[in-house]
Amino acid sequence: MLHEINTPYSVETIYAKSPIGDRMAKLNNPVFEWLGLALGAVWCEFEEKLSTIDIVQKIESKHLSLVEYQSYLLNMRQQVKEGARWISRAASSMDDSHTPLRNALIAHSAAEHKDFTMLEQDYVKVGGALSTIQTAEKNIGSEALHAYIFAQSSQTNPVHAFGATFIIEGMGTKKAGLWAHCISKALSLPIEDISFLYYHGKADEDHYENLLKVLTSPFITEEVAVRMVKCAKVVARLYALQLEELDNC
Image (tube, rainbow, N blue to C red):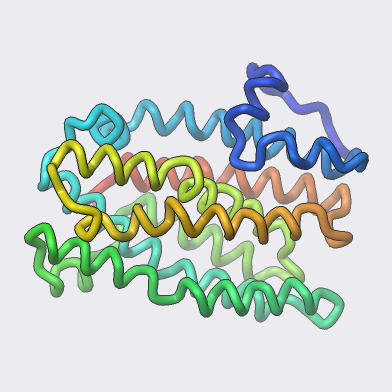
């Protein structure tokens, strides 16, 4: 069932860029090794796509304006607010045969369900109105991302939905800290005004350790691995879409 991984990237490049590196290749398990490589290939393609998006280019080149930073915060708040709902839905979809995963998801949801308030606080600190960010609609990319992940999380024992976690937590591990630094330099802002990105640049490293426990657990069969990679591909495209469609509601 495990198919050949079609990718233009070398194995060395994939492991160098992937948020999980080559750690799954060292476990002497062909399913884990395939999954780690396949997810890494998805990440490489995702990162390449991100590099073409206007807001990402402006952040990473340190040419971001204050208005553009406000727009980023406003748009991301709507997606982040839904995050705990996705996680809670996935937990409620796990039956008793998947109790360890259900417990882990509940704990994760409890830890993150107020993360969106950091975006609100950052928005207000840089001149935005709290009522504006709290009442803004999802942009069309965020609408699609929310609908897809919620649908996947509603399936029975949705272990494959951790493919979404791979992408979203990977943004924290690989991009949040970098972007916080770039925004701080571009706008001469203190850490306190970029709290969401600074926090996730550190916290998501721990979250990835928990994700690795799932990815190397007995719940990962060949079928689950293939479905997880498909989920990661879709989420990567939709995550990029919401950054492409800032303020397009």
